[in-house]
Image (cartoon, rainbow, N blue to C red; front, side, top):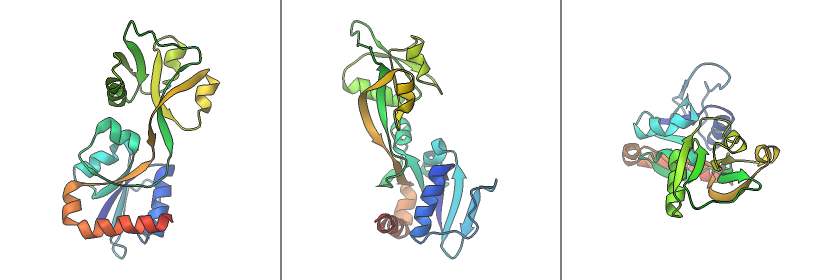
Length: 206
């Protein structure tokens, strides 16, 4: 059996549909109820639902052989897993955004509001800019509006929320999409099965 961790929500449903089309369907699969684990002996696969932010943890610790997780989470948490494939789903971009009239006062540390603390620190370290991180968990756009931060580092999909709040993107940090990751031990001991899964997904995406 291959144990696969799926992120709860619409992305998880899309990923399952792709996996099913690649030959990994599960007769008991149902995303509408409260059941969390689904297995199919015939397909040789077992799925379970977890919060998107926890997928990499389940994979890293071996509870799952493989899982699907956003590139944003991989960059933020740096889990000890193998990144095997870009599934091309859930596309968006990690960006720096600020008020339309913002300018960078380099005489002091830049105040950065974000829930992606490590992403922000790594990005500004690379460009040599001192920052003060303000950790927030939601409504990040509010911070520069209220003068609490100079900029935000956040995920941008359509940019609509930024425009409605008179903010704009000043820099794109990296593209985000759903990635297939594998537990390192599982990749060694179930190498043939996991490689077949990757190849089947690649074929199904065409």
